[in-house]
Image 1: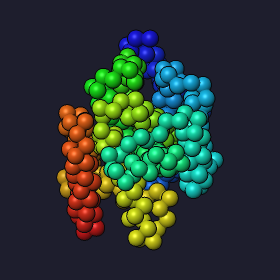
Image 2: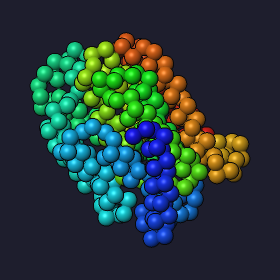
Image 3: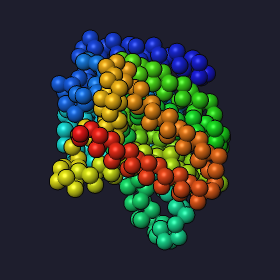
Length: 337
């Protein structure tokens, strides 16, 4: 189906789902429900409908076999259980995520093949280690995606940028050009609704985007040798580093690393801009998100021009992590004052 028609169909579908959820009071987000979002939430009553849209797009368009689609779909339904507060334990959710992804990797036999680090590449010859490393990376991206979904358009804008880079690579033997183009058009539609606070991803949407893009990138890595594995690492650096840094930060502070808080980089940046410029507009929420998204897209585009040079990719990856740490420390110090 042409991207134009898909855009119109999913627009109608999203409007219907939003109307239905609001009418029936289903999957509604508000500060009273998710208190860690209280300082930055855009509206008082917003349906978590965007996850359903990206899930349906996946079911209709992406060419996975039936068993793969079923296994990947379990991550979406796990997110639904979280959104409806029927599975509140982060440890249980992580356990089930690990189980689902493990079954997928065993069935699909698609694992990380190379890291360009000799010691690790030697270990990758052992199937169990290859599966474990791939499992670890996907779980980090899934949960990191949920961590960065604290501002409107931050998570969506991030994966929109990644999808544009995949489109620019134009590796048709891996992905059909029209499918990626349609995926971008639907992400843009979701981005528009999310920007104006009319729809949220919820855990179902952020989890599902995390696993879907992870698998797309691993398949791309698996199918072509011209792309450095560190280029893939650059494309997922932000959600991965966000969750790893948050776990370390909370452990140092003797806090439970599995529970949400409002001390992530995007939240500190939001509070800093609000305080520094005395901005009261609700659009400060997505504006802050897009400051981060613009930075990420620029680094992705730079990496795209050198995607086969691992040394350049490592430098960009380290630079991004260093930039995160510097700005985090500056913002935390400013907010604490």
